[in-house]
Image (cartoon, rainbow, N blue to C red; front, side, top):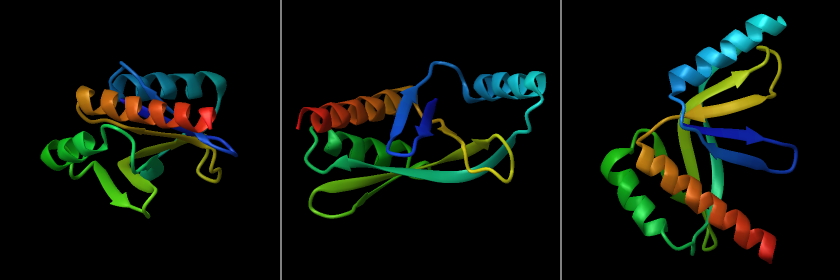
Length: 127
């Protein structure tokens, strides 16, 4: 399962070993125990990867072969590729936009996408 947490200036991508169902169940139990409302909405989330990052062609092939309905790749310009994921937003209330985005696909693709994101983040920090 992939979990995206957006902040004011960036976002964080995690690759979790729990199944989507297990993680959502734990989150619902937590919300019940602390008296917090919770909304789950099907949606999409997007982020950018450098167009020249090694492994991007492998990701394109993987998406084309197995995950065309979950992952969409689109060239933004000569420098960046937009990755759009189908999944769900978990919001702490239906009126609030604070929350996390979750999605699931094959473990291999989740791991590989997470690895590419980490490499992109490392190269941005080094510049």
